[in-house]
Image (cartoon, rainbow, N blue to C red; front, side):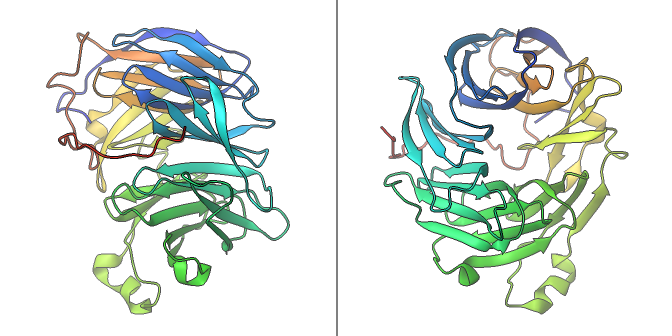
Length: 361
């Protein structure tokens, strides 16, 4: 994500929604961003190519309860999950919900992810009674779930993530400290579970680094695990399959909390000195010497979300101060130049491929 010289960024325009919190920021296109707020609204922004940001749409009362996740479908559509137990498909050309995805238990939804490879939606549920699970829908026929895995976790499922290239590989992480890897082609849950990792603390987020699995806890402990076969107990003991355990990363990474693990970077914050930093990461290597500092950040308030726009050398941030802010690389006004280079494992430049993708309208 960064070159040998850490570029400097300055704050551009900010849009304020205090006293609301800004929960999420996701790119629809290089010049349009969608955000969810604590007032249960969705906001769409025109971001152009500079340090400006302008709200162009407000979708009030998008859900009856808190929005817990957003996942982009395509340039004009996104999915949302909510504690009201419903996932929705939003068409931003019409600025309305076009479909609702429901589950048999109507449990509050805590997370959501979408796979373009299979048109599959995954959502994790809150623990209700004895059940907390992962629900899957086919977006081409979403009237009812195609899978409901309800026995793999015994607490709120806070994160779900599809593998970017392995179409049927799905991760779920929960406050029970477990990360579960599924093969979603299999309906029987016992057979569908390929691997279970006990991270030992409530999961903030989980995802793939290549084929390895990372887990970050709410206690700021971080590890990277190898994919193993649950039927081969000896496989986990092999030296090449040992996890890389970073432990509590707050002191070594110079922060008070981790905002997110992105593609090629780690975003970390410190409330006491109003600081937000992006640290390049490739595989298991964290390049602390090339960290980017965003001075002032969101003051003493927690930063909730970070969105990197490499094409235009910008960073978008949202926080509990109610602000969405744009940060522009100094000396850069147009599309990214040589200084905005890749160090991330997953952000390789590749040729555009023509794909037939389902459009849910």
